[in-house]
Image (cartoon, rainbow, N blue to C red; front, side):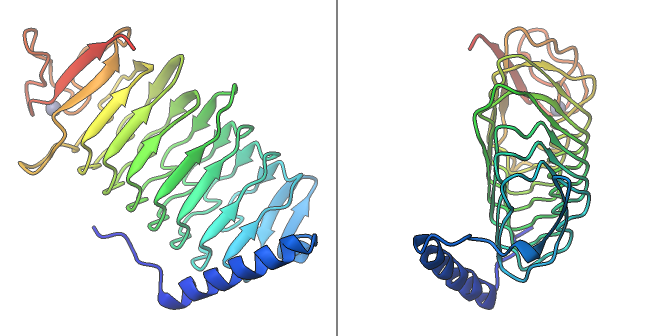
Length: 259
Ligand SMILES: [Zn+2]
């Protein structure tokens, strides 16, 4: 699947807003329009702006369920470092968002929070000493995402959290501790080439399933922390060959290493 292209009009509006924003910032004026945001007791309930850039006000602690659902003109969202929770379907179907930065205080990204953000190319994770919980389908169908490189501890990656990210080539999970990866977390990510998991993986079910489905697949091996416990392959659930450590079904090599 090709990633959706942002229309010329949306691009123009984006550039124009960026230009205006810079002008306004230089003038030292508040860079967002407070009436665009419906906020109650630290919870951003709803976005009502028309801008293609949403600067969420500083002080917001939670982005409520569905706060931005379907805002398909939104190209950029700036999340302040006061936010701890991104609610269910908060940005679901925001098909023009190109990048997102997850601030250090965010500890929970809920169900389908970024589901179907088909223009999302980059997710930045700020370094943090708090661990992050990514719920089921949180980034499912982010079909433009090419690299996922976590710079912070992630405690849990839910079912199909990154499934159908058809452009995902590079996957680096950089936990210090254990990470629990649930069933089908990276299902159908069939563009994967480099997969290195520095953390100690705990996985009951395959999570790289259908990533190596055709002869075009470039994913040949996946590297794990030596302390990970893997009984069967993480791709097909088939047993690993004792000699070669390859999946007996598709041949994906499972390497264990000390990082
Ligand atoms: Zn396999």
